[in-house]
Length: 190
Length: 190
Ligand SMILES: [Fe+3]
Ligand SMILES: [Fe+3]
Ligand SMILES: [Mg+2]
Image 1: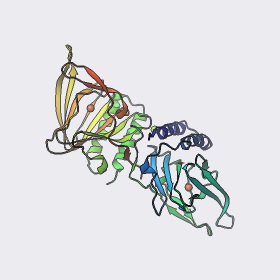
Image 2: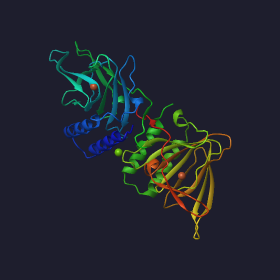
Image 3: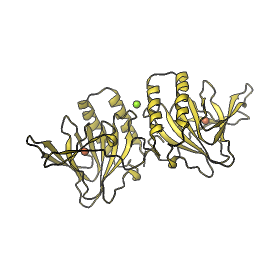
Image 4: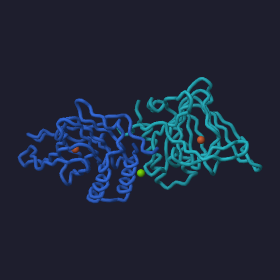
């Protein structure tokens, strides 16, 4: 087990955000970098791949010191899923292990959220969200009897950002802060 | 236990190195920042304060993504000490808990290293090393029956730098890479 590929991803993303790239370029190049990271499943330390019997887990893997981006391991037990939620910053999602289902929603003129798209990503697949391209979705483990793991990258320190969950029927938002599942992150620098 | 003060230190040091400050300014301002960090002993997570019965421990607390600096917790069991060694980059040392003795050496014209200075720092004390101000020393726990902890900051990813230990008599150098004691670092971003 070597975290070299995660360190290389972090360094490349640091260079990308420090280059002054705008969001479309960050999403385009970031998807390429994340696709490369999740193409090989040999680098995630076991401690950051542990499911919880009740809740999907969000393990911080790395945060930029200026909180311009964060990298999170989502570990999905069988059947686990998010509520309908937004991010308020760009996000790139890559599947490392198993399968993830993403259902995208838009606000209806009359109120409430309507599902516009559903996609299932297998290992190696990559997708993106943001306020400019569609920021509201539900994500879930597409496998009924196995753990799935996806790597999420966000344009901020996602665990501390105040964002929203929604009632799909009425569209009513509720503020939430997701936090992180662990008090430690991997040492990428050994 | 909140790691807020460590995060604030990391952010301030990131700003300092990104400001383009030269080494004398980094050492001067860095000593001030580290002095503030070690003035209060309420932020180091227990997992990074554990002594080993035989060896002093070097726990990475944070590494800059461009490896411009690293922050390390040195945990000294009773009587533990380093060999005579150098760093090849600047270093700032602050004592968090207990007492640390530092013995500084210079190369003698005839060969071998001569001790030029010895100092004992208590909690809150700060000192510095570098190739330009004196880079060769021995550091040890000054307490015979208690654990001491010091926070070391270096101008690079110190655990991966090839540097030297010396035979004090002959001055003969031997290359070494110190590494780190743990595969995880604290999550500063919750
Ligand atoms: Fe999401
Ligand atoms: Fe030293
Ligand atoms: Mg930076």
